[in-house]
Image (cartoon, rainbow, N blue to C red; front, top):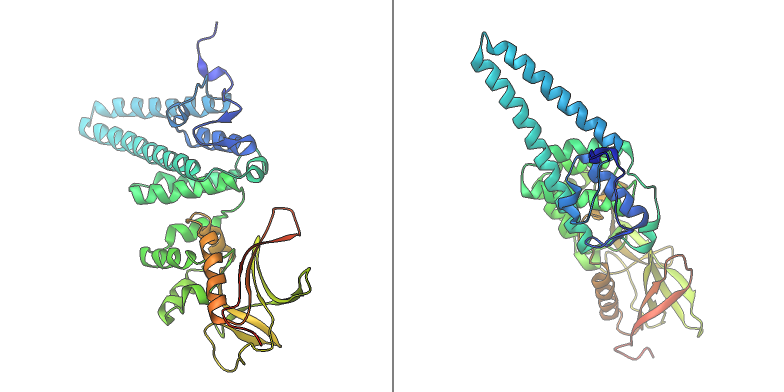
Length: 345
């Protein structure tokens, strides 16, 4: 019987219970941990028979490199023992420190996946392994994650990429790495009011000029300029009620149209008119900003309800509604109705 466990296939149950990761997402997680050199036994607390043959080759290469360095050090030891000792300790210390950092990042990713397991759709989608370009870049950042804050950040990135592959391009990873703490905190506060890829100003308020400049310079939001808007669609529901309707991916809000709606002219913090359509002023995330928002807490359910409340207050003679749409469906379902606070007559 061959006792070398590196010659066997990695054995993992059909479902990794501690993380709730299934199907392709599970495979992506296992492959990522194996690629980063982490201890999957300690990380998942499940029975593992072995690493793959690929892992064995990587391990053998490391061992040979260390042996070669050791041999060089011993040779130099004859003439300069202090130099040899410094070289050996410096190199091996660096190797061990980088691996410690990567292991800690993987642990943070596991924690994040436990808190927010992939959806059934995400679990089954994508390939069985993460993109090599992503994992190569990510490994360099994980190696330098010396603080708990950095490990937390990169752990959330890894978890998000496992949930939804191809979210984090090289550009996105670079922005995450270079983002200064002050701008990062501002962006996180902005994203607390995020609905899909936009932030309604009625929820967040106005950014200061310096704040908008910092977020724009970092590539996180579309340049404010003259302002962005989310134009309503004018629809009629099944009961014949005309509505102003704003769609935010899988959720939407609506106001019943009424002739008593206040006239809008000039700057307005809540509504604007654009080509005769009622609009909401918004901030728009760039593709980079939207990708990064996926590693932040999702408050969209709370925010969409707040938006309904605020619209109801701003238009007291209209009925405000909250709609949701199931994945892969075109049907909108009314989840909440706030009746008019004042008669529309």
